Amino acid sequence: MTREEAWDILCEFTTSENLRKHALAVECCVTAYARRFAEDVEKWSVTALLHDFDWEIHPEAPDHPMKGEPILAARGVSGEIRRAILSHANYSGVPRESLLEKTLFACDELAGFLTAVSLVKPGRSIFEVDVKSVRKKMKDKAFARSVSREDIVNGAAGLGVGLDEHIDFCIQAMRGRVEELGLKGTVGLQ
Image (cartoon, rainbow, N blue to C red; front, side, top):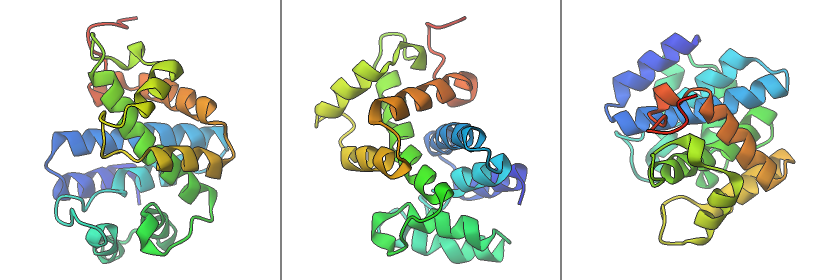
């Protein structure tokens, strides 16, 4: 499956611009790791774009991603990608074994959290976000309360990357696509 085909599936099932941007943010982080690990960037891109494709039609656990998986199978999405998508949900019973599975899990919650931190900055920009500000916001339980801090910490550990390094790596990845993500804001117009 190509990235373009994955994008079409995402857009078919996802009307929310914010959910589409979340998929793009996760893709930024996941594909940056694919390059770092010398893995198949397009396969990793497809996985990231499709990981929450069914969220609007199955917004409750365990329906998401369990009921979305057969839809992807019918669309010709490989078993490897479908397994990675299933493994990103702690309750799916699918353990994270491959590097792709571990990377998707590590990037999912963090990409969402980095977006949230960006949007509360004065200039609403990822260019204003750094590791220190992210760590501070992680301690604030009222901020972005739906984002699992435990998953962020465990995701980095599962990848074998220090948390601060993981946060900085994903910030840098997302800075590379600020226009698409809507995180350029009014600063960082470099």
